[in-house]
Image (cartoon, rainbow, N blue to C red; front, side, top):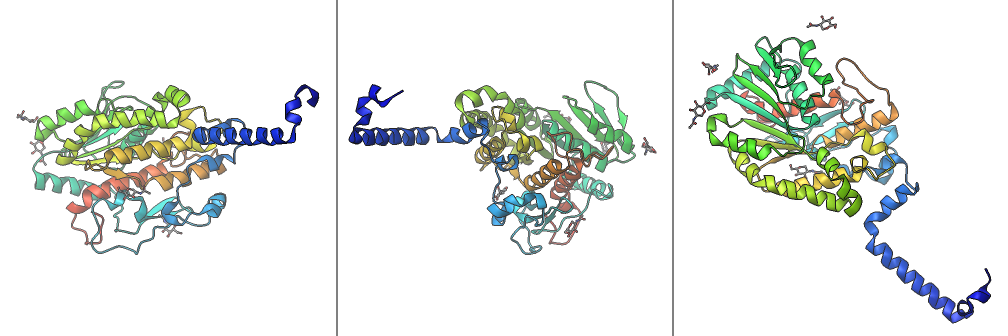
Length: 398
Ligand SMILES: *[C@@H]1O[C@H](CO)[C@@H](O)[C@H](O)[C@H]1NC(C)=O
Ligand SMILES: *[C@@H]1O[C@H](CO)[C@@H](O)[C@H](O)[C@H]1NC(C)=O
Ligand SMILES: *[C@@H]1O[C@H](CO)[C@@H](O)[C@H](O)[C@H]1NC(C)=O
Ligand SMILES: *[C@@H]1O[C@H](CO)[C@@H](O)[C@H](O)[C@H]1NC(C)=O
Ligand SMILES: *[C@@H]1O[C@H](CO)[C@@H](O)[C@H](O)[C@H]1NC(C)=O
């Protein structure tokens, strides 16, 4: 093709005008579609190494760009910028991300705001706690975990941690028989199962009930909340719930057609509908919302047409939850996020790392964190609930 076919472009002035107009059009397009650019680049294969797709938040200001790039060498812990143990901790600091130092060497989180008891090595302290609670509040203690498989993981670990001679549990749909909860092998078996059903555990000796409600989209929560609030003897003493993951999957179509923000908007509307129930629940009991962890799969996949593989999506949905739940009295649990981040990095390094039967490490499962983390999550829940009943020193977490 020769320029003779386009004589007007041959004029030097017109050629300059042409370039200027083209430039302006490109700038306008870039501004209009700025949200889609990273996605466009990643589909075009022009992406940064996969790990960098994760929303690397600036953990307590100490994780800068250079440190992000050095993540694989794991030399430095994420540090909380706090002195060790203030003498009067604020309530619920076990759930605050900024209270911890996160050790990459052993995947542990160390609370610097307040002292934590280790409940996981023996069920004795837990049993004392529930008995004291019963004496003080004069009603049976009921804990409810509501949500998806990540809540079931927490349930499984709690079951193993609190097991004793009087504990029994039942999968209410698939098995419908009480099983012996004093046998670690039996309680541990729950870890390997993927039931989408209610699981109940009861310790007759201390009148303690622990229930996992499968409610992966958080659709049934308002109805349950009504039931619980009808009769104060039915109100749980603790509710821990989580969402997001299946809501992300559910909003897949919207994610493609309208973009991540439209998908997150749908989640916002859903949480807004739950809000009145949550406000009422939080006024009468302790309600904790766990944010969605970093998962290995969100850090590996290049292809971002799939909403549930898009690491940015997780940050977005967490932001929405924090926003909608603020002012409701619901406690936000974000102290697990850096732990899950370190776990995911380790799995990227050693994809086959796996320890059975404990599943402390279970890297082949890319959509859950291993029990090396979950058992610390359990300990957080127990510290937040039980410390007040056990007469510990005043530096202990409240
Ligand atoms: C984990 O490592 C840190 C730093 O080396 C250490 O201070 C801490 O005691 C360790 N925690 C456990 C549970 O081993
Ligand atoms: C658990 O199972 C292992 C092997 O499967 C067995 O050696 C162990 O004795 C069992 N423990 C209990 C408490 O039943
Ligand atoms: C547990 O509940 C039963 C029946 O409701 C009651 O008789 C018993 O006193 C309770 N146990 C404790 C330790 O409160
Ligand atoms: C509340 O529940 C308790 C125990 O299930 C029951 O004994 C009591 O009658 C109920 N109270 C009302 C007002 O329904
Ligand atoms: C975590 O949640 C606490 C309150 O629950 C909040 O003060 C803190 O800013 C949150 N941290 C991050 C990093 O989101």
